[in-house]
Length: 226
Image (cartoon, rainbow, N blue to C red; front, side, top):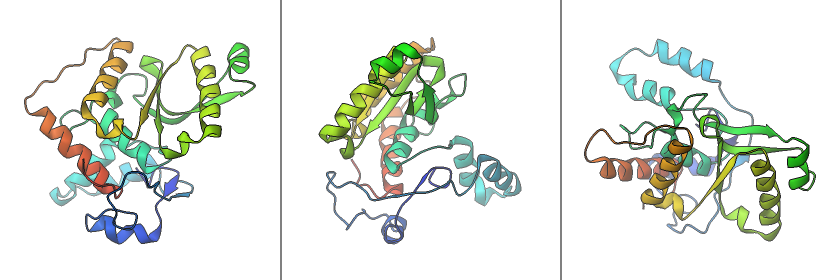
């Protein structure tokens, strides 16, 4: 997801994350925003799919599955974890919304406003949706600590008004909810209902699988387990 996205973690994050540590600075606190750099994607989905076709050995099975699940466009580690939980297949511990029709979940999708929506958004002509789900006409936003600043709250409120003016539901996930599997499940159920699809588990032990998956996703970006 980092290779396909528009962010990169600093060099000093590599060793702690690769050894299963917490970054930044080895702290376990959640009130520290992880630094990241904006960049162009390192690869395309076509590149990764070509590599997956070449990597036929059983030793590359995890890589091939990662390519199958991943999607381009993530702009932050938090968005990557959010997509991993909401979008990934249930058999891995996600909630399966990435398999909904009309494209599943589109990360950082541009939604152009009509005239009324522009007025509702105080002149904004469009919004970039963190995760737009066309089948459900729903935008899922991940709000890290940067969104807690007053100016950011005002901006978010205006853009959310514009999105709602386009008939799109806005769901906001904050940092606390990204640690709350029950809350994430309820959000996924709402998305499926809006898409006209039934949300149902077809196997036992799914909660333990979800807990493990969430902590693996968090470990991948240097966050402490929950």
